[in-house]
Amino acid sequence: MHTNKKHVMSLEEKLTEGQLDAYLESREDYAEDERIPRAWQSIRNKRSPLLDDADRMIEIALDNNDAQAEAAARAYRQALRDVPQDFSDPDDVVWPTKPEGV
Image (cartoon, rainbow, N blue to C red; front, side, top):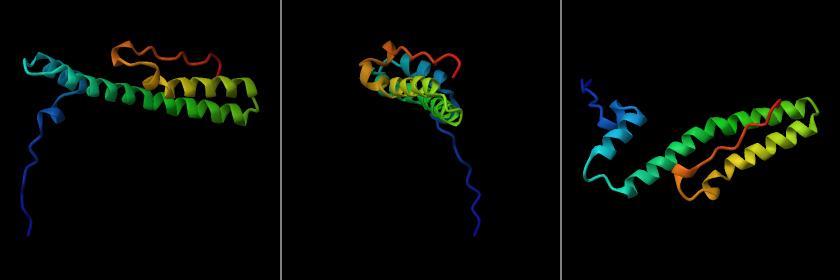
């Protein structure tokens, strides 16, 4: 039997991440403890593709037998991994600089 149920989108599904943040912050009952986990999730979302890029940089350096580029890419990747431990507040995160020429 086929049922024809419509999916009702939640507010979170309808809004982009920035729009949802703005909406939540505008609510009077929005607590700071709700914002922090969302902010860390945003940091992780930004970091993930940067880690993928760092992995590719390492692979390319290994393929090219470029020990200096490999070391720079590995240091960059480790700095990205350390972001959650190096910063206690997600608003204070300073992203590591991608190595030049890698």
